[in-house]
Length: 142
Image 1 (tube, helix red, strand yellow):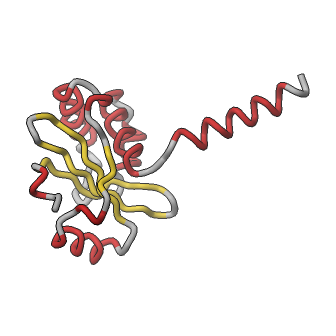
Image 2 (image 1 turned 90 degrees about the vertical axis):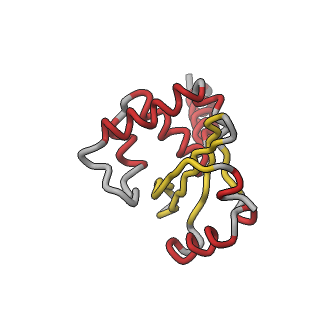
């Protein structure tokens, strides 16, 4: 039993370390919270959104869950962090002015060459969605 406890503890650490909590994972968690109607997780991730979500959580979750359903599921959405060097200069400059260097862009493929592009702000090691919009690649990539 004494040998089992350290093994379980190390396994737990490995699981936590590998589960990822970066920008792309945060967006995946947002989609999952919307689909699962997990209001607490959804509101936490959206707590810094440019428009107030409080009071409109259910409607926002339904809209985002619809995106997931229309795309065929979270695993089909190719949720990826976009390298800052690949973002058009005007957008990059605006985001840097607004959030300093602590901003990240994540895209989710909605199909038909349309992407939902999320902007996240990193604060104290946590990522928060601050804005989002559906765009074509040429509207946000160089």
